[in-house]
Image 1 (cartoon, rainbow, N blue to C red):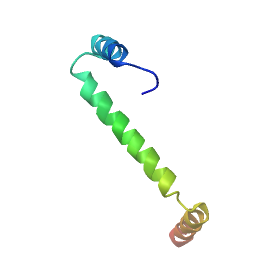
Image 2 (cartoon, rainbow, N blue to C red; image 1 turned 120 degrees about the vertical axis):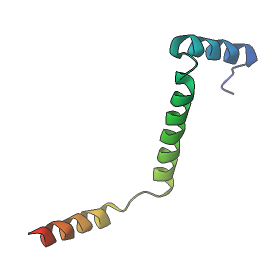
Image 3 (cartoon, rainbow, N blue to C red; image 1 turned 45 degrees about the vertical axis):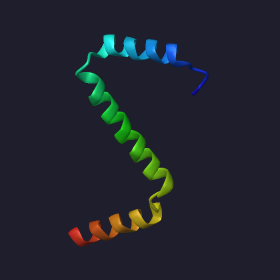
Image 4 (cartoon, rainbow, N blue to C red; image 1 turned 90 degrees about the vertical axis):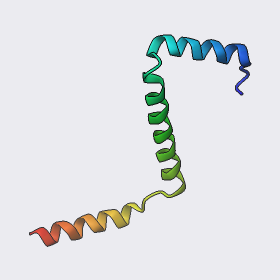
Length: 64
């Protein structure tokens, strides 16, 4: 894993625990996971820009 062994990973985790504290680590992990999941979903299913533009145009014309 990126040339890191268990001693290096352990040191990184201990430093992160000291910096953020035990209550903040799960929140950081959750938000990172959600961000990565959203990024992955957008890469696999990119929105069709021309379709979204035409939908916005239709919605704006109905409001007038």
